[in-house]
Image 1 (cartoon, rainbow, N blue to C red):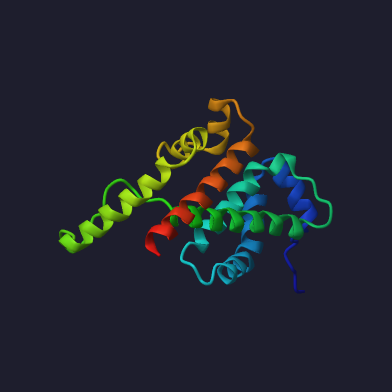
Image 2: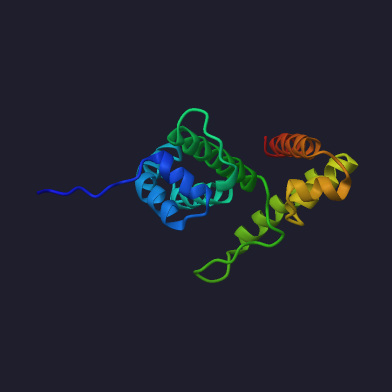
Amino acid sequence: MNFQPIVPDDGELLLQLKQGDRIAFDEIFNRFADPILTYIRLRLNGSEEADDVLQEVFIRLWKKRQSIVIHTSFRNYLYTIVQHCISDHLRASKRKRYTLPAEMPERTEGRPLPDEQYQYKQAYHIWKNATNKLPGQMRRIYAMKNEDQLSVKEIASELQLSEQTVKNQLHTAGQRIVKMLRQVYF
């Protein structure tokens, strides 16, 4: 006789996951991680950060396990989390391109060349000047996000604003800074 192991279906696994069963979580990970990682790599053009996004998907799944409500299928629910994580990653990557640290990054091959130091300082001062030209509250929100590294929720709480207002201000600030930087470079 040939015995096949009994494999729980997605519905059973979901019920077990909702109860905090780590074995069910591991089974879900084993079933879905490879196809999800392939999908993430495709969406991020083979980015090395695909593993980080995959990890974030399963962290979110675990955190939301007790409040999961399935309207279509568990697979669709999981891929919705994947889409959100990819979008969050792309937004974060885009934001990093438009912020400069106050000091030039270290070079592994020794000290930066004087020309590199000069160019970096020039770029930093242009960026800093652009941020200083933002209107008062927008400048404060932008600084809290990019210099103090506060989350949107923390900024909204501290300034007694809605999270959407903070998001709108950050978006507008980013657009204005990019516009000012383009004027300087062109």
